Image 1 (tube, rainbow, N blue to C red):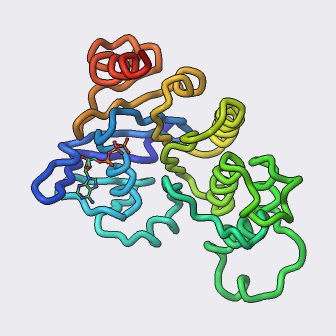
Image 2 (tube, rainbow, N blue to C red):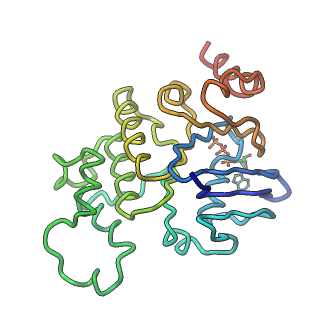
Length: 248
Ligand SMILES: Nc1ncnc2c1ncn2[C@@H]1O[C@H](COP(=O)(O)OP(=O)(O)OP(=O)(O)O)[C@@H](O)[C@H]1O
């Protein structure tokens, strides 16, 4: 395995507040990495920097050997980094397959986009199959359940053929069944993509994560496999302990 994403000494400051205070993170090609941490730990900020939405005060982000510093968002997407947001980006009036087709077209050259296309491209068919929404292909996205909509968004990312997917809390608000289906979906996607998942849900983490990075107050607190991370007293104190108390 070789590093696909290499973050070094990343600092982000908002109006004097250090949201990230010198983060180092290496994600290898083909990994499914979970990023966890209490509210305000800096998880979304980290994704925002990688995708060009937020500018760091210092530090470097290298993706497949290319330094991303200073690149605009669309350039970063074209390099092969796709992300989901905590808020939905599907077009409700368009059908499931039209949403996927639109996303797939994002990286097509203009002449191909303008040409009248018949049927569904292989890319769209494959994405539809992966997310398991084949039966709903011709229904407007507006009728989808919350879980199905999340899967469509993941499908829209896959249709863009990214090398790295950054998913921000993909199971938030999902039912137990939907969580399980999402866990299986992530495992499947990770077979031929590198995936970074920001997630709060500890039960989900235990079932589907292998490598975990814990952020706390803008720094990496612990990194390792799920068992190592769960057993670490620092993690129990800032994260698991808090969760247990909240659950009590
Ligand atoms: N645009 C901004 N301006 C000012 N402060 C911000 C901005 N974005 C984030 N912050 C602050 O930076 C810190 C890190 O926020 P971030 O959203 O990255 O945390 P998080 O780990 O994703 O938390 P959550 O789990 O609640 O989503 C928080 O204290 C937040 O209030």
